[in-house]
Image 1 (cartoon, rainbow, N blue to C red):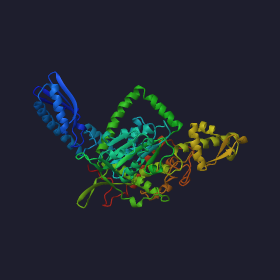
Image 2: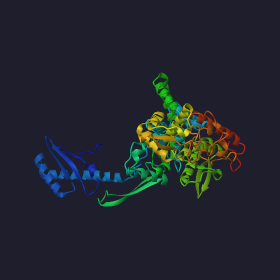
Image 3: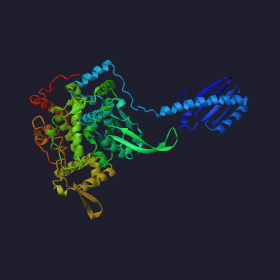
Image 4: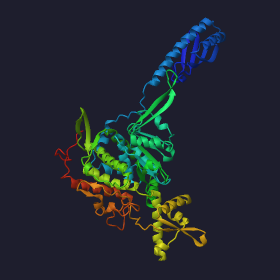
Length: 585
């Protein structure tokens, strides 16, 4: 039997070639293409070997074409039939066997293992992860990169996070996705450009378990949106479909199941995204400032130099180390001894899901540090469970990230519209300064919106409509009613405000993030809401100059380290041992 499914049988001076055996899906069918040759003579025909009349007709015709007796042709056909039946039966049995669709991870060399272990045991692991993203070509986006990395790690947990990167076209959402996925082993991720409505149901029962399902554009999976939401919420998919029994050929109802958990990773340029999908995801937004664009262009030019070529080779080694490190992460449970002391908002029903994301974010940080923590054991119903414990440092870092990510997800304005609002606010302030006019007297047109925000006419119309609906902008008639002009009603400090999530508890000293908003001025200035229901809720001391996105993470790491030092004397386990115990691995 050849690789292509062709069967060849030689009987004396006669050679029989059979093709198409694999197309027979039941025992009632045995339709094949049969070619018989004898010396310079041949006979080619398509025949159903399971039909007696077809066999009789073939024997008569083949004996004439090949110049052999009907008895010899009949005997040869019987031998061909037995060989074809044996092959057909073997194929049917093979199809009924369960298949593993998950590729095995490649074995690590001793050097890769040592490098990965050194990374996971690095006391400055979080800071190193963000620095490695920068070294591998990702410009800025320290918080997004770190949250993305932690989210991919949660694929090994029972309830993974889901990510949705939202930005305008060409802002860099795909670059962020590719950078994060590059650090994940190829065997642990599946990347699609689009999916049809029911394609998820037929991926294979074990094919997606504890893996990442990455989809380039949310628009490409709108037909499969329902399946994605169910997969994320319930952790598995099940569908009943009608098909043929491979043995009898009868129609029957067959159940297809895809087991999770699965970590979802999506990107989108849409301003309006399905609310049922977004409230299941952490929504990340891309920095679209002019300074960020300038930094990206500089990096693109540097990549063409000799130094850029060397940096690319270094990036390959860094990527290999992070992939190996993620392979070494064991599927441990995470226990949070401070869970009953945490706080969260409770004024909206969607916060029930956001609270789960917040707790999973804490778990991800603790899980990532498993090689720096003692591995604990407990026995339940005769089964030994291994787990690591959450520390106050994990909660401190998770709180800082939650302000940026979850605080933004609770904002009423999409990031693209918020950027337009910021441009309009700057335009109005400049007009007040130069024209000495009252704020309510300043008017602007849609052309001004396009010029100030750098958007197309279609985008300007969409953003203005949303700002009008939220009563941030008022519409007025122009002169003689010939043109619409607009007034900026919004008077918040959008230049200094950014997302923040109130009510989170710092377990190291029992304070809330509201108490810390004025103390951590570097974070308070870059992690507070600009407007909407969260505006003004947590405003601390205002600063004249606010840090850029690149400055956020070093400050964040410094705060975490200070918290760790402050918490060290009183952060003890329930058995009385300190968190400084040497890890047991």
